[in-house]
Image 1 (cartoon, one colour):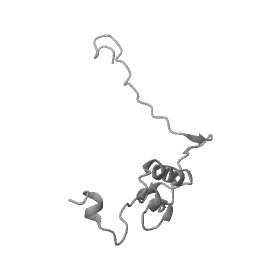
Image 2 (cartoon, helix red, strand yellow):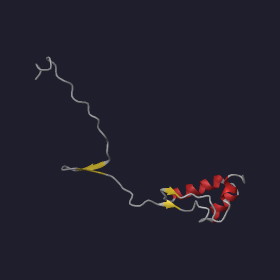
Image 3 (cartoon, helix red, strand yellow):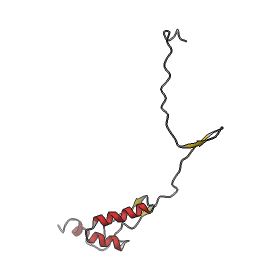
Image 4 (cartoon, one colour):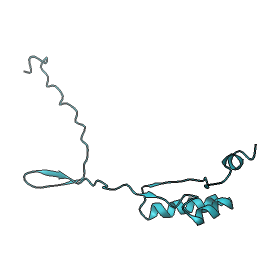
Length: 99
């Protein structure tokens, strides 16, 4: 074999190990993988569903609105359903400044 390669030994193939958290025994390794069985959507960042959100929005307190979203994420929500449209309001007047 060395004669085939010109008298030198070929370098071993470079490995690219990937670390996967897991536990192992003498017989097998089992990866520790957690799957979220549910996908929780926070519903309080909605002008129709939350009086507090609507009041913050009307006052222009966007920092307060962001704080409400952060509270929901802290309580376990994976995503937020945000809506600034109030049912029955004039959407064009509110978003385009009455143009």
